[in-house]
Length: 354
Image 1: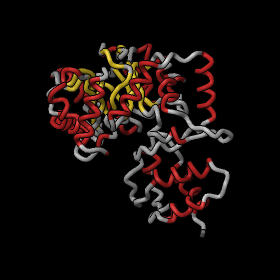
Image 2: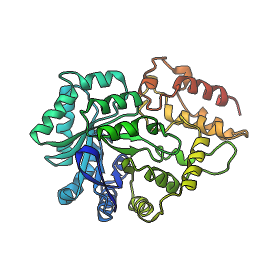
Image 3: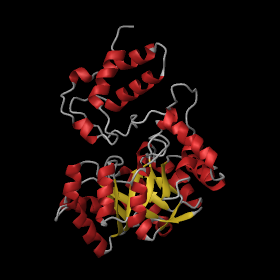
Image 4: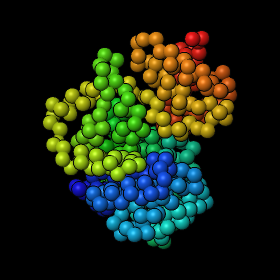
């Protein structure tokens, strides 16, 4: 497995990383088998977070492997609270759940709203808790994760962070505009999330083409950007990490012509689609926002009458008609989608008798 330097951390990370976001969807035995297979294949970066599953379920499953193979792993986790006390508590919970006394990289989770950034960067905010933890030796390096490009720029320019996790894929290439060059200038190591767009990207097709992106195309495209140290992929089965590693290790580099073809293909896919990340939940009105949004995504891509969509929509017990208009979902959306407008459009398109 090829190794890359992760910015000023000086950590040497595998080109493909292990993402623990989907581990709460499988039992302990499968989670352990998948992670062990990843390590056997040379993957050395393992990523998780406090909010992945109830009571740190992902962290606790990873801990089963850490008992035996901690020295083979660069371990990353993150906490959702931006205050000093909240971040300190999250870190303590992560250490306990992972059954380790040291985490190589710890990040504030998804700093995508200005209020979160302000709390984090305050004089006695969450960043101070992480700086103290680094001095005490319970974490090795401080990173960040975010979907807000303006805040990402601010965090990079602050020179308080050593690495950052950002979105990059065929249809979402905003990182290229400013962030990649800026991170290189400040020696902040960037690694990639949502290379498959929570698997939703693999379901998209251009309006005039009958094809969708493949896993190989998505991975090879991301791997072609040399300024990213690592591509993080969420996996839940050994065969999934085997496929990702095989693509990374055996695929020839994209030619200039192939790369341009993929960029053109990405341009033809609709930007701003719903990833199904569920950051918009819970909804105070109990609207299942991601499921409804994905119905609309599909309906907009087909030109024929789709009665199944109306049947599925009719099953929802709460819709835009129940919306409290609080805008909480839009404030939390990493894609900055006009969620209420999209929910209204879904209602107009699909709320009809059969």
